[in-house]
Amino acid sequence: MTRWWAPAAWIAGGWQRDVVLEADASGHWSHVAAGVPAPHDAERLAGPVLPGLVDAHSHAFQRAFAGLAESRSSDSDDFWSWRGRMYKVANAVTPEALRAIAAHLYVELLRGGYTQVCEFHYLQHQADGTPYDDPLALSMALADAAADAGIGLTLLPVLYERAGFGAPTLRPDQRRFHAGADDVWRRSQDFAARVAAAGRAALVPLNAGLAIHSVRAAAADSIARLRTLAHEFDGPIHVHVSEQRAELRDCVAATGQTPVAWLASQGWLDARWQLVHATHVDAGEIAATAASGAGVVICPGTEGNLGDGFTDLPAWLAAGVDLAIGSDSNVTRSWREELRWMEYGQRLRLERRNVCAQPARSQPDTAASLFERARAGGGRAAGHARWGLEVGARADLLVIDPDDASLLGLPPSRWLDALVFSSPGRPWRDVMVAGRWALRQHHHAHVERISAGFARAMAQLWGEG
Ligand SMILES: [Zn+2]
Image 1: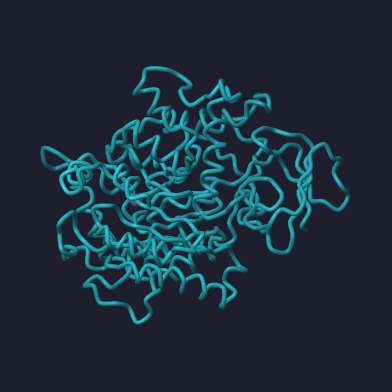
Image 2: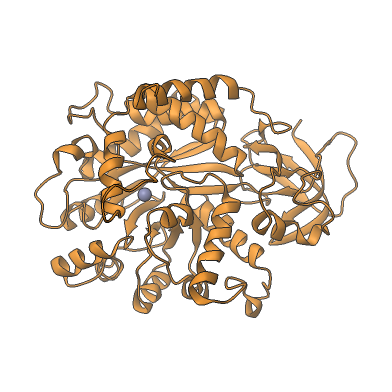
C-alpha cells in the first residue's frame, strides 16, 4: 500500500482534516492533499498524523551509560568528571556491542517519535588506537543497527585530533577517537559509497555528513583543510560549541574569542553548519550565526543532566535561527520530553510561562512553535531540504493513538500541546519511515531479539551484578 488517508494531519504548521498521502517508490511523498474523502484504495490510518522528527545529535554508545552516572562520591561532580567516566564506556565498546546498543537505542528513538538520527560518531579505532582492518567497522555497526531498527541514519564522522587548545595530540584514553581532516572526509565519502553499493540505503535511508568535535579538539588548519575538501559538499557539517564555560575560557585564551565568534570571524559558517549546544553565547554570536544561515542543535535532556546551563532560547527564536533537537547522551529518547524541557528550562530561568510561543509571528502555541522549529531545523541538520508532510519530503509519519490516556477528552486542536506538556502517555501507535512501517500498533517486529542483544552487551560491559 502506498496510499494512506488520515482523519487529520499536521501540514504547513497546523492541523488539516481528511488528508490523503501518497508515497513514490523512493519512499518520498508524491501527493499530499487535505479535504479529500477517503479513497477506496487507501489504507485508513487509525488516528491523526504528525511528521516524524529528526534526532539531530546522538552518541549511540552513551546509551549504555544512561542511569549509571547519577551518584557523587566527592565534593563536586561536573561535566569533566562525567566525561572521565563516560570514556570508560567509550573504550570498552566493540563493534558487536555498539551494534547491539545502537539497535536498542534506535527502537527506543522510534518509540519516542524520531524517524531519523544523526550520529556524531567519534569512535574510530580499537581502544589502543590501532585501526580496525575495516576503517568503517564501527560506522557499519551503526548502519546495521539502523537497518535492523528501521530508522534513518545520518553518519557524521568526527574530526578529533587533540586533547585541548595547545595540546599536540590526544590523551591516551582518547586514542580511539583520532581522525584528521583527510580521514574524516574519506570516511564520509566511503560510507556513502558503501551503503549505496550494497543497496543498504534502499532498506533504510542512510546518508553521511561531516563533523568537527569542537574548536578545542581540532586545530584551525585542520578545520580549514576539511572545509577545502568539502568545498563542493552539500551535506551537513556539525560541531560541538560553547557547551561548557571552561571551553570558552580556554578558547578566549588561545584565540582571543569565544568559539562561535571565532568560527564566524574565520568566515567559515554557512547554511551547512550546525552548532551543537551553543549554550553560552552572547548577542553578537547569535547575530553572526543568524547572518551565516547556520543552525543550532539543542539537547535539553543531556544539557540538564550534565549541568551545562541555559541557552538564550528567546534570542535564538527571535533571530530566526534554525533550531533542531538532539538526544546527545541518550538519557532521554523522546522528542516530547526534549521539547518540554526546552520550554521548562526557560520558564525556570525567566520565571515566566509560554516563553517559546511567538504570538508576533502568528504562533501563539508553545508546542507548535517548538515543534515547527524542530521539524524544519532537524531536517536540515540531517541534510534534507524538505522535512514533513509535503511533496518531496521523505515519507515518514507518526500515527497518534486516539485512545491514549493523555489525549482523552481534549479537542484535536490541543493535541500537540498535550503531547508535549501532558505526560507520560504512549501516543505513537504506528511509525513510518520512508514509506515502510517501523512500528505497528506499538509493536516493533524485532524488539525481542534487539532487547536481548542489548541486555547481553550491557552484561558484558558492566558485569552481571
Ligand atoms: Zn555531543
